[in-house]
Image (cartoon, rainbow, N blue to C red):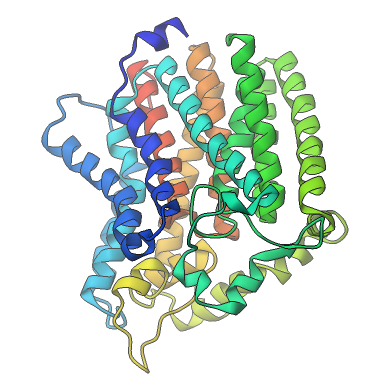
Length: 441
């Protein structure tokens, strides 16, 4: 940690903080009127950093293997803007901007993060930000005074939508799924995943002082509790996936004792977080979790997001194999789309549906190719063995990013801030790897 302390704070640190701080502004009363600028700002920072990288950066970093895939995705989107079913030029360009803002850190993050110690500090800051989010989420269920002054108008304007994001608590009162430091019920689940996983990683790090390890453990505990209370089951599944991948990577690296310690501690926190959530949230929490354990997992998925997957590959694939126009779904459609009776917006709950609409099977192939190449590269760096501190960092990033990537089956991570986190960590690890002279990183 001594080397890390000598690295001055810079844009990378403030960028990570901004991804929590900007949405947190929506906690303030009256901010729904400026919700769009606040939401746009979190993405615009990434685009501004890309512009700076192109115009001002003097540091040359070798291209990563994923960058060519990202360029192909953007080229396809540019072509699809002129699709006859694109609802408007403004909406199409807005959707392109969202895609690229999410992926842009892959290009500029390597310039800012060049050492394992620096990457460790970035991960620690991400843990603190995510952990604060998770703690607020837990407190929101315990005491409703912690809830934001106003919810997103998309949710609060519909009685049906509000009913879907509430549950009956331990004392019989109706509780809102915690938004954390955001204005959308249940939104705490994403940051809570990072808090739970990174907290456990730092809790078993013997290089840290005891008070930091205890703090990390407490944040991991809050993260798991927040996930249970949000009732977003896929976040629980992905957190367990992250834990399993990291334990396996540690074992593959020859750190068997660390893998065992991490796995045992993780099991305890998963159970402990459930006990806390059950005490606060009541039987509804147990019933929600039991749906994952009491039946066929594929059946549970089919009843939830599986219908969207079936829609994508049983209907949209045949109706629009090469896409249905850019900007037909998501926030770009909501804010910038221009629709008619014949050309309507489409609801996309999972990333595959969004990709099929925006670019068809080609888009799915290109973006999945980018994710696969990124994962394989991170696995290679994590298991190469020449640079122990780099290997450790790569293992953490690999596990964290696989958990985010797997969300494509139940969410749309790559048009949201959790997608920005994915590509930022991928870019940061690439910067560290190239600084160590790793070929093919």
